Image 1 (cartoon, rainbow, N blue to C red):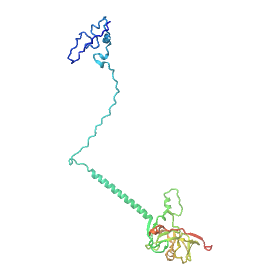
Image 2 (tube, rainbow, N blue to C red):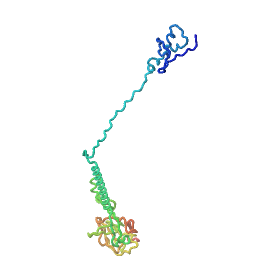
Image 3 (tube, rainbow, N blue to C red):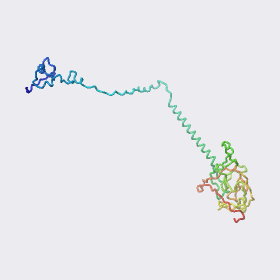
Image 4 (cartoon, rainbow, N blue to C red):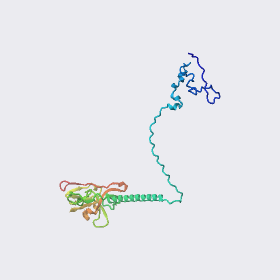
Length: 322
């Protein structure tokens, strides 16, 4: 066996300009790359080298066939594509018209009228609410100015008071009971919403003679009680009334025979007893004439504060050691 190397075959490259050695016509591999010539691939002859092993057509790889690598490439598996979302057509642009080409509704004046209507409604609501608050306050609080010295030194001439006219309000419970099944309020039918005039309250009331004049006095006797005055001292049902609010005032004088206060009326007197026209002269005051209870004194500024209402106390019975 001859192991001497053989000269390599020169390839004929396109465009090289140098022709290579001629190829046998009967060559299986025309390019002479893989398959040996016919004389080397004889039927029984032993090749001089082992090149026949590489040039044997039976050992030709698939990618070396005439179709090239594409014949041996395995099929490529691709996942199915997701369906693409439907394409929505773009909204058509708003039509524009040149000025004066078409008549459009006047939207701006409509909005202006709507705003004006809303503003008017808000103003009316505010005014009505303010009026309602004013009437509510007016119905419950009133303003008075003290004239004269009948309440001195408790109240001075020219002093301003705020009077609560709601505190003595009355309701007819019998009428209300008609709308409440099974409720029997019993007598009396008329009852105070909060409470009635109490002893020591400073009240404002209309003059019982009917003249257009309001008076300010202090409640002394309640309905059904017997009021008597002896040497300036007040007795209620035979018990002396201790009145600390009279300190500093002129000492009271005078007498008054026992007077029974009628139901629904109140015996009132001024704190300046020697200079006051009160129930000793005009008689007990019916509750229908009472305006309200003094709650606050607000002028002059140095006297600002709660009205000087008091709760006088009844002492022991007359003749039992006063």
